[in-house]
Image (tube, rainbow over all chains, first blue to last red; front, side):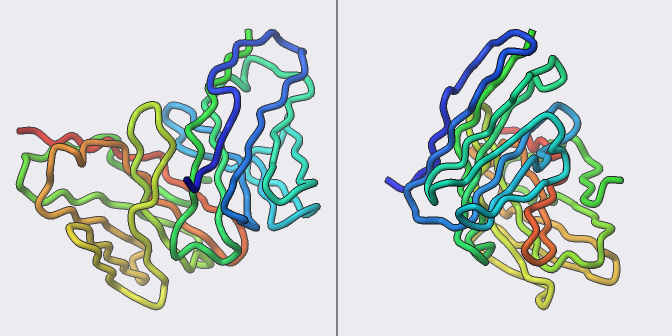
Amino acid sequence: EAQVTQNPRYLITVTGKKLTVTCSQNMNHEYMSWYRQDPGLGLRQIYYSMNVEVTDKGDVPEGYKVSRKEKRNFPLILESPSPNQTSLYFCASSFAGGLNYGYTFGSGTRLTVV
Amino acid sequence: DQQVKQNSPSLSVQEGRISILNCDYTNSMFDYFLWYKKYPAEGPTFLISISSIKDKNEDGRFTVFLNKSAKHLSLHIVPSQPGDSAVYFCAASAGADGLTFGKGTHLIIQP
């Protein structure tokens, strides 16, 4: 089944403890992206990647890092999480120029930083 | 500065009637527009899209209209069904950049 898989689905952590949210897609998509969803703010892009070793900042990149060493994986790294990064995170992927078909989203990761 | 705006946080429509969800944008560089549907505890799913060279795109019960001069697009759902109850996000893209999303509209279909 074609899908985007995020792990974990739920995570509670403490301020300052480094964490990684993994994202993997099995559709050979070139484009991958991370979004966060917050009440009243909709979906905001954190980082995106056009292909392996090509990453760029989205609208809200502060406090996050990403890497794209393999085509299928696009992990989101929080080096020193803070409570304002408590949010619902979505990973998405598509073929390059694949907007005709939209993005495929993962099921989300709900992160709580205390 | 919010580039994609959905000014109605929620919309209630009777089953069988038409649902119209609206979206406004400010960035004239946007050349592709999409609508996503999201159920609780799931990721958004792609619904329908439209290129800026068109003014209408239809797919079954869903039609998207684009008015470039007004920087406005709308999603029409006819007839509305209970399973259409969800949050709908409008999104826009300018070239190779990622998508910019609106805040969403919660559509409630009443029996």
